[in-house]
Length: 237
Image (cartoon, rainbow, N blue to C red; front, side):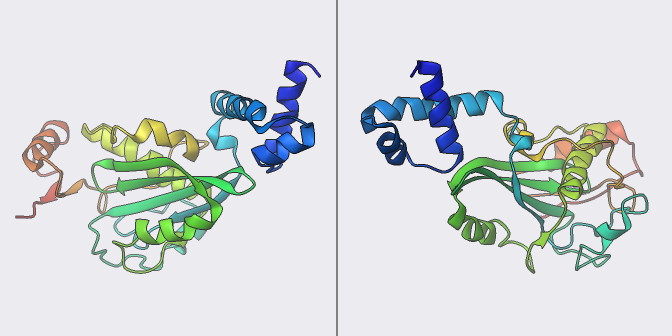
């Protein structure tokens, strides 16, 4: 068997969920000989595969995500996916988004976004985090622990509209997403078009300061981009 044929066989078996030991036994090779082939397969998959093409196992968002947002142009079903709906969220316009994609039979990749839908866009990004499929529930419980109520399962298109739409809105105000955003966003994938959601609180930027923000710099940026009277803010002391 040629090197290319052997590598192809290893890749096929890995995609079917076989362990390195199982591959070695099936091919009549020593485990030490199979290990570098498995690493090579993993590297090839990472370099050639689009993460957004991997099977989506789940997509969730925190309750209260839509409060203050305009959904008039969004699919009618989206509003019904927020149990809090138009109520006042205690989270101040923050939404957590979590997606899980399949890597192989028992392994997944988890990615998360903390989104300020009123002003700053993506404030934090988590991942890509590889883990066993059995660990996702505990990870999700911890990830959404700051929110009242359980996370809501939503279509990928809604998550893309929230994340990418908030980033575009924030950039228009002068704010860039978190530095880890570029490493995580390929797993989310890009939407087919502009977000149908109207961001800001009731159509206006509304900045709520967080523990790691620089409030003065944020307010000065809003003054420069939208002008006095065209935004609101609340700074915690």
